Length: 183
Image 1 (tube, one colour):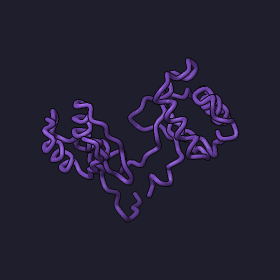
Image 2: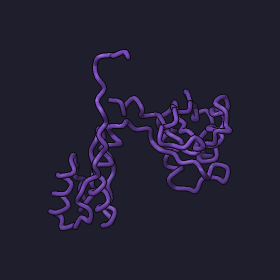
Image 3: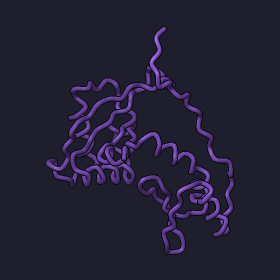
């Protein structure tokens, strides 16, 4: 459900802090027009754009990520496609563009690492499905995978060896007490 609400969002990594928040909108529009010159400017509408808080592990010199909500989904998809295909223009070469996904989805994708790594090693195409599943294109069919164990089993059935069978262990997040305490 959370990913559905983020469907039109893009996450930008590497936009310099020298670009003030008031100028983010225009900066992003210029970048979008460089990436997708065939898209009419009326289709490149940004509903909102803002910087995220800096994660604790990030040095203070690193630029914070920017989240922008693109009004039209098809325009967002064109931007993503253009950022994957072409080299970014020189002015924007340090910027990386990602889909804005929930922490749960990112965790699922990370745990599927051994399976996706094996698929890449064997040049097998895959894509991510909704809500959180791996869709593998193999032998002219789409095979949905919901767990690492299911993915490993599927690879074994196809005779595709896996180099790293140990899935990435996620760090345990301490649970917050449901009660507020004062000290």
